[in-house]
Each structure stands twice: as C-alpha cells, then as structure tokens.
Length: 297
Length: 325
Image 1 (tube, each protein chain N blue to C red):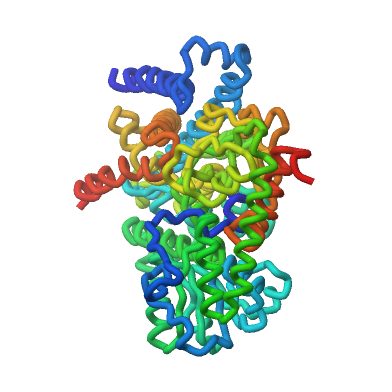
Image 2: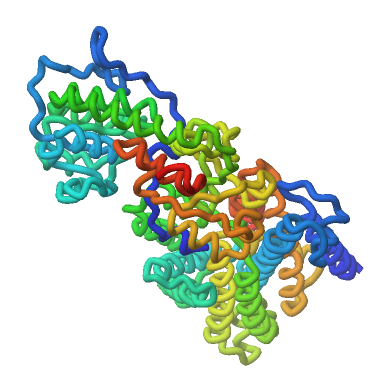
C-alpha cells in the first residue's frame, strides 16, 4: 500500500480541479485571460523571455515557434525534447515566484486556478506580464493557442497548429464512429481509487477514441471510488499508466474485477495523454489503437 | 457476572460485525449469495467481491484493531497512564516515518515494511523516553505524553518534507494513507500482519504479570523485586512493534488503543492477561465497525478509517482528560 505513495505518476493538470472557468476571449474588444485580466496584444512589445508554468503551454509555445524564447519551465515538462534543456523553475502550481523572477522573464504563462492568484499578483507587481490560462478541455486548446500566438507574435502558426490538431482529432473520431463502443474504466490512482468523471479532458479524449467511460455520470472530474463499485459497473476494458497497470495485474484485490481476470488491462502512455496539448490527436489515436485494434493505421 | 457478560457479549458482537461487514458493501448482495460465495460457489463476480475484497479487508481491520487495542492496554498499564496509546505517544508517527523512508529507499516487500516501521517507532519511543526523563529522575507520564504528541507532529512534518516535490495525487495518496485505511487489503498483507501480531501478542501475554506489577506504581513494583526500568522498556518496545506492524499495513489509525482498554476495564477486567485478550477482542470489533462505517457512509467514495476512529476517540479522550485533572 505504501509503495503507492512514493510512486511517481505524471497526471494531467486537468484532474483535481473543478472550479468554474472564466471564459477567455480572443478578438472582440479587449482580450482577457482566464483570470479576467486584460492581455495587452499588439500594443506591448513581443516578449523575448517567457517562463511557462503549464506543460501544455510549453508544448504549444514550442509548436508555434516561440520555443527559443522559453527561458523557464516546470519540473513536469518532458516534451518536446528541447524543452528539457530549458531551466526548470520547480512546480507549476503555486510556483516559486523567486525562482521564476530569477529567469528575468517578460512574460509568464501560468495555470488559472485560485491557487495561482497570489503568484500572478506578485509577478504583476514585479512588472512582469502574466497570462493565466485554463487548458482543461479540448475546446480550451484552440483558445489558448490563439491567445499565446497573439501574445508572442506567432498568430499565423498558432492558427495552423490549432487547425492541425482539430483535424487529427476529427480523423480519429471518424475512424471509430461506426464501431461498438467498449465500456472503459480509466485508472488514475489506487489509494484511494481515483478515476475520471464527466467533464475531464480524458473523458473527452476517450469519447473521441470511441470508448465509453463507465464513470461518465460522475460530476467531479476526478471522482474517488472503490473496487466494488467498479465491479458493479463492469467495464470491458481498464486503461492505466504503466505503473498503475503493473500494480493492478499484481494485486489480488483488483483480480476481483472481471476485466482484470480477462486480461483486459491496457497500458496508456501517461506522458502523451495526460493533458490537452499539441499532441492530442496522437493521444486520441493511441487510445483508439488500444480499444479498437485495427481501426486506425 | 459482569465479566462473563463482557466475554459472551463481546464475542457475539464481534461475530455479528464480521458477518455484517462481509455482507454489506457498495454492491448489494443477497445473504444467501454471500454465504455461498464464502465457500467459493456462485457467480464469479460475487465470489471475487466476497473472497478477494471483503474478507481480507475485514480480517485486516480485525487484526489492526486487535493490535492497537493490545498495544494501548500494555502501554496504559506499564506507564500507569490512562491516556497512553501508540498514536498519542508518537509511536505511530515514528512508524510512519520509518515506513515512508523504506518506500523511498525502494523497499516494498509487505513483510519487510513493518521492520522499518518498527525502527522508526523505536526511535520515536527512545526520544519520548529521553524527554520524559529529562523532566526528573523517572519518566513523568504527562511529560511523556506531551513529548509523544510533539514527536508525532515532527513525524508529520518529516513526511510532508519528503513529499515536497511530489505531484498532487501522490500527496492526496499520502494524506489518505496517513489517515488510515484498509481498503487495499489482500491476503498476503493479512498473513504478514497476523504473523507480527501473533508474536508480539504472545510476548505481551508473557509479560502480562510484569504489567500487573508495574501498574501498581514504581515503588511497589521495585519492592516486589522487578527491574522497573528494564521491564518497562521491554513492554514499551513490544507494544511499539505491534503498533508499527499495524501502521505498515493500514496507516495511522488513532484512538483505538486509547478507547478500547477503558471499555474492557469498565467491564471489570483488571489483570493484564485477560485485559490484553479483551482489548484484542474489543479493538477488533471497533475497527471492523469503523471500516464498515467508512465504506457505507458516502459510497462509492470511502472515508479514511482514521477519521472515523478519531471522531469517536477525541471526545472520549477529552472526557478522560477532564476526569484525570
């Protein structure tokens, strides 16, 4: 049981946060971020030193060609490879403001949760531009891409990136559209047992990939449950990260779940599917290949 | 008479709680199906729910309760302190640090974890005894308790420091474990805890006469020819091993060791041999009940076991504290 605590699992920022989002708007009158603060567009000069405190935003910045200007990232950033060369400023949530300022940024991108409001205020007080973004869902991605594109002077490439991702998702959806949808239990954590609920990014991704989440009725994006309740919902397939899957297969308690006894525990690449990002299309395809073998090339 | 009623009543209540805890859960099952599933017959899912989930869980809860009850009874007797129990004395906290260190060092074997937890618990005990003694020649029970609470706080802090860089769900998992739970129970855990509990319980029963004498007070005990220091230390260490094994299996479950010996003494049991047995019985029943409540209170999510025992235990502690002062 204890080993679960020490085990290191990368989890999406999308899990564990259920606060209402303030809609960011691009275009129209004033552009505002997800804290409702105005994002000064063309009037300010283009940022030259960016610290990104959201792994998904780091991926986006690299994808739209602003990568060379990223001078700080979180300890969770692992993609693209060149992002690993950028100095790590620690946690992305409740960031260490001093460590961020030590990178001398002129733009900080951080996650728009209430935990981060004090850091945003402190950074602004230090004269640094801050963009707070909430990239929790598939629909948030396009808006974030366009906002970061506008802020970095890479709007055209941001549009192209958003379109490419949308097309990739549409392709996966089309490929699995006519197929029977297996009932899926998504294993996030096992002490306590945590899964994905309606409104989480992974629930959306599973839907695109042609699966049905057995916890789609749970209001929380990351509901806590029990093995008995999973048996009651009787999933056809269990999706888990490499560590979780190994643990499920080794556990006597998990063998009580029919899908586990039938050997239907499939391993997802948690680094790929963890968050709404540039690689969402790839992520959806990887899940579709697991639950619908042969549907995609 | 009162004692006979306690033993018969205790056994009946424990049996009833075990049956209820096996029969009752998130998935509603007919009593007949449960009975058949215990024997391994019937639908595969039902058999799995009963034999792989509920039975080991109930057995683990039983052992955790028995261990904590006996540990509390031995500590209260030998320290002559009605408020002594492993959680409040920092023993459980020290055990938790030992277990976390072991896991961080890559030790995950179910059988080895209790030894690391015991090492942590022994260090905590040593520190508490040192502080307790610094106040005056022999360990003052109140200072000892205070030192234990402080060491428990230090242990919490040490675990939080160890988790500083961990992702949010790891922290959620760690907090969950620190609040105690038997939700991950399997038969190998049950077997290991049963082994540790049997050895430590046998040792405590063996020392039961020493506890009886220590409970008279240090002067009379010394007068009866007992090496008070040595006997006290031995009992303290065995009680810590018992508590450490429960911590390694189920995390921190507080206040069981406090409440249970009082219940048994309330039934008129005074001598420590029967008191220890009674504490095992009552502790087992209490934790099986607490786990049943933890499971059915808010399904499908489960409450932490330690939260349920604390809600019962804290008011009890305050009443005892008032009576004492």
